[in-house]
Length: 394
Image (cartoon, rainbow, N blue to C red):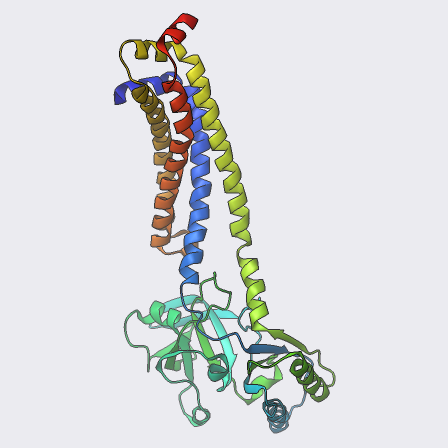
């Protein structure tokens, strides 16, 4: 039976080649769609790493300029106290511009005994950054005021960088350098990685540097943790306080809740585009299958009638047409799977191999279900052909 089906497919190889090409192209697009879906889902189920609901970001520029470090520290300390004196403010922290849900990104390389990790997110933060963001400390400790007098320079790394550098080993106390292996710093803590790019983007390796007194010359963000009852009236007072204190500065206040929504929408744009293309190709494949099978039924009415006349049941005729379609799909999917398997083998896009494998399995199931469903109705039409009518027409 299988040999007979392959002979029938070979006899119409030109017509079937076009259909196999449609199935192959659709499979590759569906594979890309499922890869993104699995990637987004894996990222979505991971913890955010911090609390964003009641955190606001205040951006500023053209702030206090002075060569005197003491005057600089006094200026920002007075501003800190003015903001913290508001009843709706729980914590504040000055930090670098690459805060969560913003497009700003600072990155570099970190190394440990010859092992280099590139594209490491680098944050410059104050001691109050972790409580302001409600970050989770996994091991070690966070920065304190006592660190300013310590001989060794310290850093805090996130869980992603710890996994890449040390695996399941201990990170606390290890000396980590820059991309050239210089500027060694001691790891004093490991925090949960934060998804700064939104729910659907992986956190990535990160390192937190403690801001010194000179850092106030270029820091441009203030993270403000507020109480749940903070409203528009309080936002107006906060803006007025900042504007009065920084006369020549442009002040902008954003809520991380709103920034997260915008960031998530921006992240799913590739998914939307691929889904539209995938739907278009799936519709084309479905229409192609219907058309080809319908054409085959009309061209093969004599063959079908003869088979029915010699004792073939309607179910067996229907099963033959469905089997032909499934074999065509299998031939196309074998070729498509060969190309799809190269993605985890070559580590394309630096994604986990499990993401590609799950996407491959889901794509195979989807295409097989599509071909099977599209073959059912034409198969039933073929099974309904009466032998006498078909042979009389011939």
